Length: 197
Ligand code: GLN
Image (tube, rainbow, N blue to C red; front, side, top):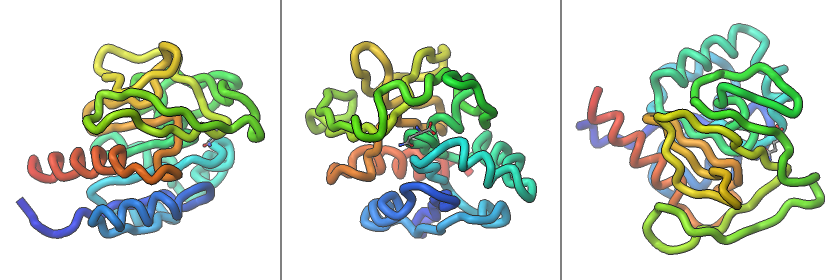
């Protein structure tokens, strides 16, 4: 296995990318802020941050970025948070919109209130180390999960942290809490995938 630092891209077209970048750096990753499709080459993993999924789609629809990203997420570990989860989902409602359709989940956008109703909860998860703080900002709700999706955390019976093979998705913003466990899980997934190649 290569002992070099994992190269993790953070999609930096808009939204909350800087907090992801500094968390990943503090956990030992080399971080590349991705603004062009060519920058996907050579990455070991990618974070698609929160923001506004419709705005992401507008940026992605230029210069073949959408198609390049769709191909990338089929094969390479990718972690979506909030708007990133909406982009990864196969089904998107409220309203329906285009997505990368990489993960077998259906989401309802803006299910947990308006911007000024953003809030923080502490919830048990399957991660070791006790309850996890979860920051929700106009978050989507995962309404359906396919058979290959495992649920690592829930809120009132709806999954909030899910994994399907090399893909991880959270409806909350782990980069805005001090707890590094969700990013650490993603880096563990990246390291495990690198051992296979
Ligand atoms: N409401 C946003 C959307 O639908 C997501 C919000 C977020 O990423 N914090 O794209």
